[in-house]
Picture 1 (cartoon, protein in one colour):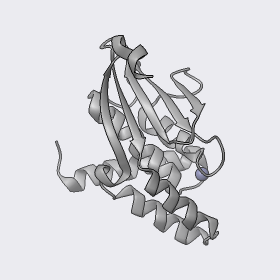
Picture 2 (cartoon, helix red, strand yellow):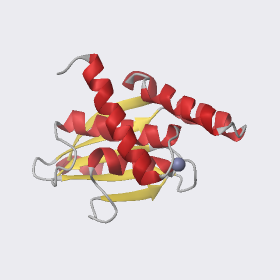
Picture 3 (tube, rainbow, N blue to C red):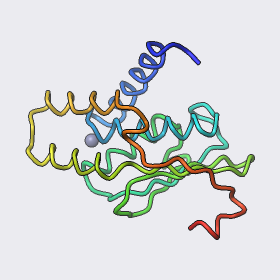
Length: 161
Ligand SMILES: [Zn+2]
């Protein structure tokens, strides 16, 4: 585990890569990056691990769909490599699965955070303010952003879904 400063500079470089892929920086992109990082951290894998796949639950509409590019960047699971799929859902979250280890984790975004962001963006703030909201999300704690991190054994999947 590095220092907090080190973690922040890692996050910054992932956010830069996500912005480059996505075309702009904003809070839902950031939320996607953070969601992906929780998945990596909990499954103890690095970005780009070929055993990792993810299913993202979300409303497929801008700006919420921006989450997808954040998750694609931070995990390396993409539509193109077939390791990222998504499902329409009113609740926003992701399931990360590590194939060989048969382990998965669900990460759900706190709905209060989603409502807050929707409200702020509905006011159509200028780009500079959207960037500030994005950075605010970048540095909130996991406990503020996410509801639960739940281990699920693939063998028990039927019971869970
Ligand atoms: Zn976006």
